[in-house]
Length: 152
Image (tube, rainbow, N blue to C red):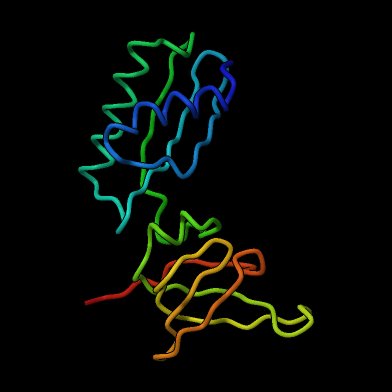
């Protein structure tokens, strides 16, 4: 079976001309049929049409390079609303969106839930607008974070 890091590099090369970022990859299945699930995103979120473009670009790249010796199933998807935000890039992609974070209080033995809008990303910290006040949080201390779905 192909190494996951090699596959990641190939997928990133296929997506780069589209300006789409791979945020996750799972490889499973068995020797005669490999299942490849690629999670893609872009600033402001990714549409179904853009996921389709990413899928075609990856499939075309695989057809040219033939990296997988057996049959494979390629699935390309958005990370979804429950995908955790972990890196500065994750927060940057979702600038101006509302998030819910779990952040330690004082000595770190307890956590508080904070909901705010991402207004700035300066690795190693982010600034959230929480009820009209800008609050800065260290990325390394955020225990959990995800997008809050807003209905308009």
